[in-house]
Length: 368
Image (tube, rainbow, N blue to C red):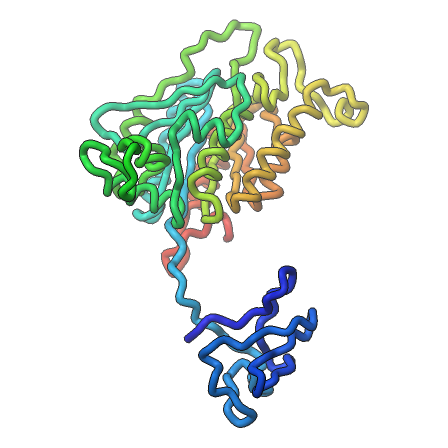
C-alpha cells in the first residue's frame, strides 16, 4: 500500500490514472486535466510498457488506496446550558444532560458551558473543587481573545486529545511542554481543563450539574431574564475552533428563552415589548433582527470553517430567536428541536433518540 501520486499543479492535485500520458523512459506523466508535466516518484523506477502499476492498467479504472494515516481523534460534545429557567425546567434539562453521558462512547470528550447574565466555562479536569471561568455576557469575544483569557495554547495535531495527552505528560512542577521551558502546567493543559473524556470526568460533570442553580441575577416581575445566548454560543465555538478545528465536534445548545443581551439580542428586557412577528420582519419593523442575523451568521461561518456542528434544543412557550439562529443549524448540518418546555415529552424523546445507538453500536445523532 502506498499513497496516490498526485499532480503538482497548485489548483489541480489530480491522481495518476489510466487516462494520463506516461513517458516510461523519462519517468514523466502528463495530467489530463491541466496538462502539467510531473515526475514519477522513485519507487516507479522499474516501470515499463509491460510492467505498469495498478493505477495505470486500463482495466483498473477504480483503485482503492489504504492510506497510512492516523485515525481521527474522538469526537467532542460541548453542552451549552441556559440557567435562566424555572427550577423544575432546569432540573429536567440537567437530568437529560446527565443521562446523555451514559449514552456517549467512553472515549468521547465532553464539556459544559452555562450562561445567564454571564458565561461560565466549567473546569472538568479537577475533581477536588468545582471551578469555572466567568466571562461577561454583554461583551463580544474573538477566538484569539478567548484563547488568551483561558490560556488554551496550541492543541497539537490531534485536536483536544493531544492537548490532554500533553497535559498528562507535564511534570509536577509544570517544567515545560515538550522540552520547552517557560510553559506551566495550566498552560500545557490548555483546553483539556474544559474538555475531558467521558470515562474520566463522568463523576465531576455529574456533580457540577447536580449542584447547578438557576442564574442568581434578580429578574423584575415585568422584565425578561438577562440571557446572553449569542455570547455563550460564540465562546463555545471559539473554544472548539481553537483546540479542535478540523475534527468532529458538536455544540448542544439548550435554551429556554430569547436572548436579551448583545451580541445576538433578539428581544427587549420589558415583557411588554412583544417579540417580532413575520409581518414585522417583512416590513423591517423588527429593531434587533438585522444585527442578530449578522452575529449568528458570523458564528455559523466560524463553526463551518472549523468543521463543527451546532444543535439547538429550544424549549419555551415564548420565542427564543430561532429565526435569527437559523443559519447556525442550517450551515453546520445540525438539528432544531422545539418544545413547549424541557418537561415536554417531545424534548425528552428527541434527546434520547438523538444519542441512541444503531445495531453496530454507533451513535445515530438524529439519523433515524
